[in-house]
Image (cartoon, rainbow, N blue to C red; front, side, top):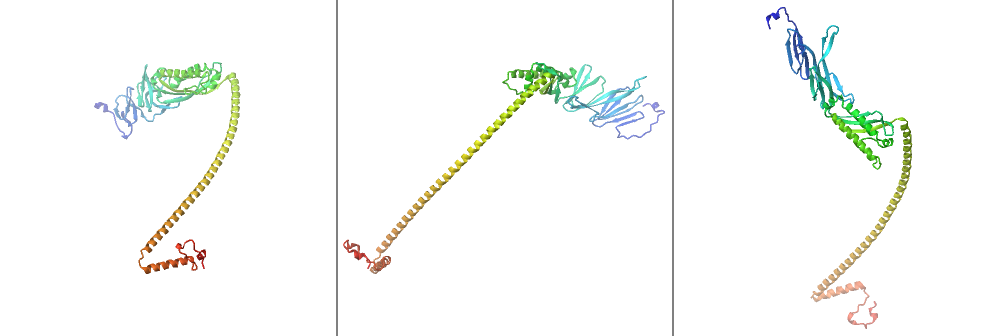
Length: 424
């Protein structure tokens, strides 16, 4: 710096170096941290932005002005979809005050625009006749020839809307409440056609197509049809059913084809409510109400008859079950008696068989004992022993039959007197 520039100048002051902006005697120091941005205007009114860094300038002619320091994560203005209420992003304008001359006074001019676009959203900028799409993130615009056309979301949206009055084929006015579900995939097409929201593009087409559909329907057909959509479950035995289905298909096809032109994918369309208007509709509503009341009364009678029949069927079923229960109890008792008799017979047979076997075993044992004893007697050779054994037999016989019994030898023959066999 030339020495002459320091003549008659005095620099005196104290500033904190940690401050974001320091301005002193033409010296400008700016230091911004992450997510901050400083908007600076040079002496020639050129505007530039400092992000995540610093800037130092010493002005000799004119000065650098710090217009604003922006927190890019907390912008001041929220942008919402005016139809669905969804948040599309945030914006903040930076303005510079300048004198506009005699009579104009000081006025503010927008010199920078900051954008914070959330995920799955975008913004459309216009420069001349060209459109530019910018994706999610933090952005700023300082070019005065660039303007913000709008913000959009790529997510699904759904909305209920009421149509204008539509006339059926028999000139009955009806107002429909419809359900729309759509997704914007090409916002540039929508902006090119001059629409600010996808809903505005769908609204007119939906009204036109539904007018064409309803104008081919009678009031009675509208009463039968609960909704106009791909999931209709009408009675296909009706002669108009195929025609109604064709109209629903055409409505969906026409609207899908029209929405693609605006970069929109239509995912669902259904009529969830309708209101008929006029005297004809009132008279028909009364007739319809009477018919419905008659149907309800008939249904109630049928229900009562069905309940009576079911009660009688229930009683008969209870009687049948009780009879089956008694029959089963009788069968069980008879089976128990038969089983008890069979068990007793089997026990008696087993007992008799056991006794017979015991008798046979006892007889066999006695026989074996006699044979053994006889063999033992046979083997005695000593005469005295033989004599003593015979005496023992005699004693045993006398003990068995009494001492007055007369024993006759068997070889005496049949001529022996019977009185000899009688005890004396």
